[in-house]
Image (cartoon, rainbow, N blue to C red; front, top):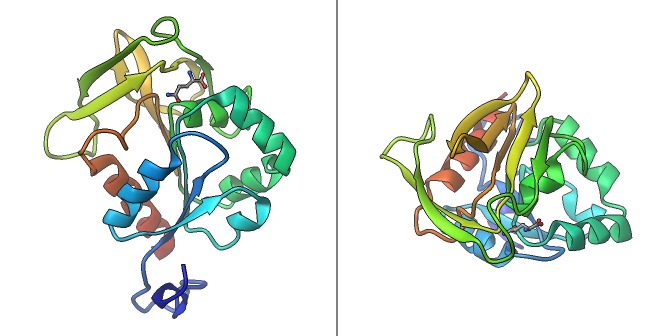
Length: 206
Ligand code: GLN
């Protein structure tokens, strides 16, 4: 965490080249390590997020998969809901995956205007892979790993559906929020994280 990122990284208003983006990865529970590894391999600096203080100064946030029930308890315990909403309201790009998608929805943090159904593809261990064509992701379909995944049951007007499986939305975008029902960190295809880091850099230039 120490090192070059501190040099000229803050603010980003100077117009000069800035150093690697600082991406928070929610580390209350679940698959945060694989996300952190993938983000680092793409040149981002990564900070694990467990408390409100960990949100300070982030350029972007990734919310990994895991168990939304356990994560909900963690968010309450640490008092993270309000600071997370403020981070989103400030326009900070967020990537939510699987349980991370659920955590952003209307029934949880309430920042992404969608309703989701947990374990929508079947009970307990129903897992599968699918090739998804995502707009804005050149290079052919993305191999998507679904593990007891949710799908989106309803989406508001500000939400764009990016991909569906069996007619059910599994990838959505609302402004700087990108949320997918699968696990992009488990395939060896880094394009979704790359796309997310592009959003972060675009946000920084504004
Ligand atoms: N089934 C989990 C939940 O409802 C999500 C699964 C996952 O993140 N892989 O929270």
